[in-house]
Image (tube, rainbow, N blue to C red; front, side, top):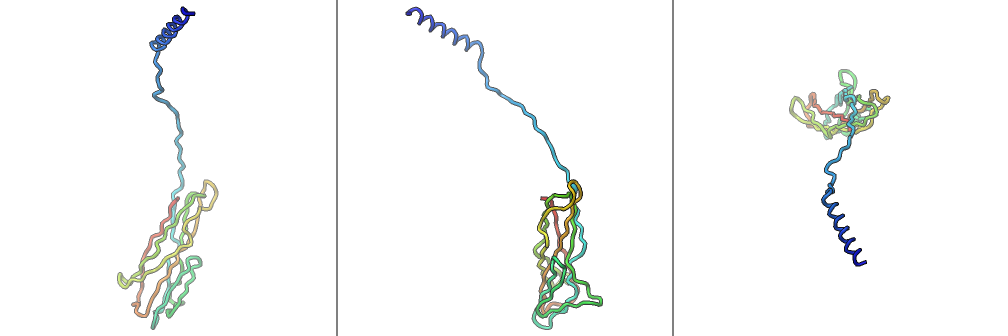
Length: 180
C-alpha cells in the first residue's frame, strides 16, 4: 500500500500536467443572432376646414356688457347680458368652425385647438375669444386598411361692452391634428 500511494500521487500529477499543457479553457468571446426589421406605412392625415367660426352681427350694448357664445356642438349662437344678436338682411349667419379629418382607418388622433385667440378691428381694438372643441382626440372610423374619417367643431365665447368700438373684427387661429 505504501508503494501504491506515491504511484497514485505521481499519476494524478502527470494527468494534471497533461490537462494543463494539452489545452486551455477559453470563454466564448462572441455570439450571433438575427432579428427582423419591420414598419407600417400609414396614409397621411388630411385636415379640411368646412366652415369658419362666425359670431354674426351683434348690436353693442348701450350700457354695460354682454357675452356672445357659439356652441361648438350645434353651432347655435347665444347672446347674454345687454348685447343682442342681429339676424336677417346682410347679417352673417352665426356658425361654429367645422372640420373634417381623414387618414388611416382605426388610427388614434389628437386634435389641438388653442384656448383662446384675438380678433381685431383692422389691427386695433382687440377682443379675446375663448375657444373650445368637440373633439380632443379619438379614432378615425372606417374599414380596416382603408381611409378613416372624423368630424369636429370649434366654438367660442367673447365679451363686448358699451365701449367696444363698432366695426368688422377678424382673427385667425390654428387647428392641428396628429396621429398618436
